[in-house]
Length: 152
Length: 260
Image 1 (cartoon, rainbow over the protein chains, first blue to last red):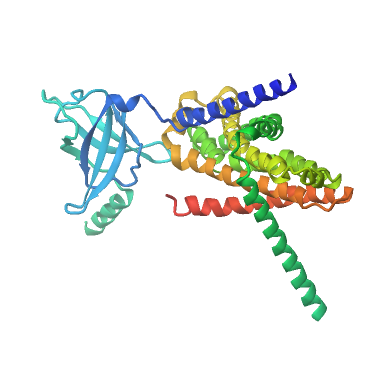
Image 2: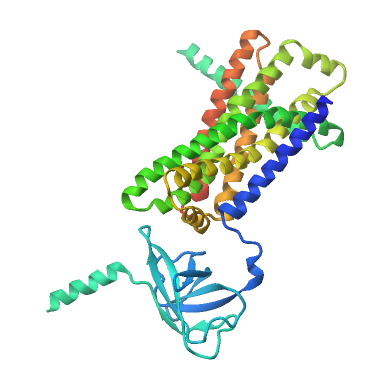
């Protein structure tokens, strides 16, 4: 009887540990098992992503609609190629959708904001977003301002 | 002068020999377990070192999480960045405090008990009588305790992290009024499964190996007197704690050194 209690409590202990690990994976690190089935990837070229990170938000009208899934650099054109994982099925974004990189909050987390288009055509898996605007880099702005003030 | 050098050499050799004995013990014990007949022993030991450590782990986790959330909240609210409480709390716990504090508590609660138990067995010559009966004490006594520690501690660390995050949430959200949505989404945005959760778990496995090794060896190698058991128990806690803290720095440096 005594051994039985020990075995049951060890079983419960291991189970609790496994549950804790699952909680850490799903609730804390935000791994979503079901999402990957219902999403597609579009790409966008930016002249400067300046601190955009993997898994950053992709939002439209302030609502999160996806995540940044890959950031590469195209050496030939000197541009960054960003893959955006959009929730839902292909066909929910019009072909002339725009994308820009904005900054959020005091910590300066970068995110991608999508601007709705009016085209009847829609973006398919792997298509490029044509209208893009890269991140505003504060140092460049200040540099511009200083040269302008200097020349006037 | 010659005497001093001789004493130094003697002590170095003694240390080296003790390290060698510990390694031989560890290796033969690690190979000693994978037998189905020994599983009941292992379960008993997991009960001793894991289940019985649960209360202290849960209680410390709750207060540590609450305190970190309180500190983060008061400092971050000066910049209007209370939303980052969840993020900071989760990263601090998963990467550092979870494995380290669990390791320290585990060394104090379970490691010392293992040392005292094995030390007493040695002092009362149970170990040598076992050998005489043809039972290998490494397999019967040492191996289950080593494996039990290595299995229990990562699980305890995971529970520690969960309870501490919950404790932090109680303080930051329910008491101080931070927004519950921002608390969780800020956390989920920046915590990565492998880089934060996975590496933290690797740390805790390494700490588990070190702590159980030290505590079992100190018990096994104790001087067979009541005083010797006392010294061995103290040494277990001291050496384990120092090793955990030193190793943590090295592990952090190699895991996050270049800010990957």
